[in-house]
Amino acid sequence: MASTPQELKQQVGAGLLSFPVTDFSPDLSFDRKGYEARLEWLNGYGAAALFAAGGTGEFFSLTPGEYPSIIETAVSVCRGRTPIIAGVGYGTRLAVEMAVVAEKAGADGLLVLPQYLITAEQEGLFRHVKAICDAVKIGVIVYNRDNCLFAAETVARLADACPNLVGYKDGAGDIERMVRVRRRLGDRLVYVGGLPTAEIYAEAYDAMGVTTYSSAVFNFIPETAVAFYAALRGGDGATVGRLLTEFFLPYIAIRDEAKGYAVSIVKAGARFVGHGAGPVRPPLLDLNDDQMTRLGALIKSLG
Image (cartoon, rainbow, N blue to C red; front, side, top):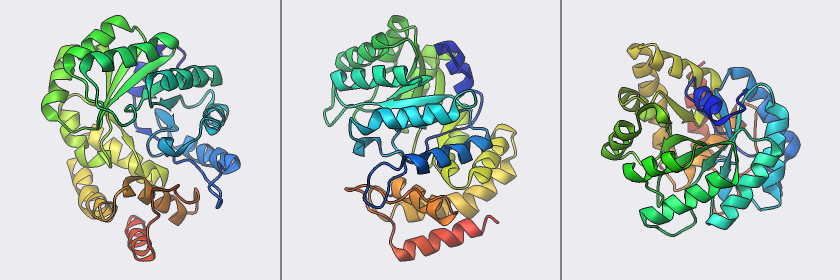
């Protein structure tokens, strides 16, 4: 179990990562017992770390009152087995408050999700992340995506100023930016692939020295997610290619049929395999019956 930022860095870089969906009851309230059961199930598949209240965990829909309970639940179930990295975000003041709550709850680290709505200058992003890092002693990973895009120089400044900044997760897919960050920072950080359905990009990112990624499908086909990761790291191109062709490409074709389905399709998959997490919260939409049927057939094809 990671206990220091540097130990967390080593743990994150050692294997596959995932971000469990958050369980909701039919009335859309947080289902703590369901979430406990989900984490207990996923714990058996050897993820290097799990992100609680992350993007696929519908972080954007959680209330301030629910957030501490979700982090506390994840820590209580996974303590001593799997490090828990808590999502934090929105404006700086709120992100700092969430960071302190997560650390108090026992989280091993933080993932800084994009700030709410606005696009900021690099100096603003620097001050935002530094405030979060300064508020806690646990390790921090920044998430480069959407309206929160870090220049290599900014990441280097943050690494110099914040000893507990240990990781850079990329969800933008800007290869030039990724290469610049990787070449500038070297082994000072751990690098995580964070694009939707990260397996599609895993070979390209692995070639750039990004040795791990967060897998959404781990939520419902953990055996396949682990097998794909092992094939990637073991140089088994035949298995990687087969799974991309037979599962991942048809899967993202369904995912891309509606906005927000990157989250919805994961909950749908969990429901299909008997580990349902309830509905997604608005403004997201659940898959329709036809899409569920096609997704189910795709999952069945894996055996």
